[in-house]
Length: 168
Image (tube, rainbow, N blue to C red; front, top):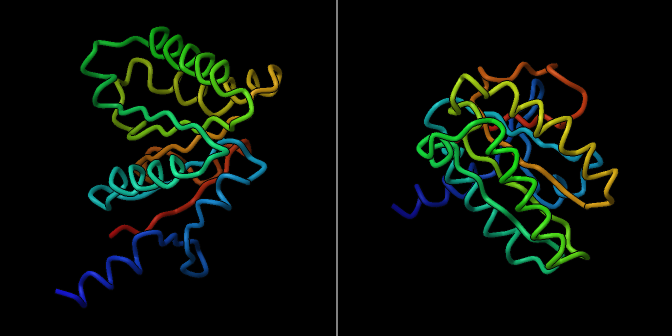
């Protein structure tokens, strides 16, 4: 049992690229000049668990304020693209007004599990439109999305940082 725990800890934040295995450094992600970070993994590789752990780590840092979105909750509320967009904009405005000196970190779990009628619009909003709006309003923001690898093409867009994840 102790040996299994050690292996889990070693692989917990592992990212794999075409050439080598590397550690996912949350501080590096948060400091990345690209505002949007898309972490990709296959089905059942622990994406949601690791995203929750990352959020806990961010919450322990004084310079950040985090907001967590879960696609299952959004889908169960019969949400539309417009209602989700309004919720995100409202949450950012509230967080910025309450903590103007903090970086706002949005965690979005399971973008690939969203309703197909608005999934592509929301991906565009989160990866292109929202970062542009925040830059214009001088809101410091970082967006971390989890998705299945099949949902994003590695070269889909230069606006975000893609990290390939090797699961637990």
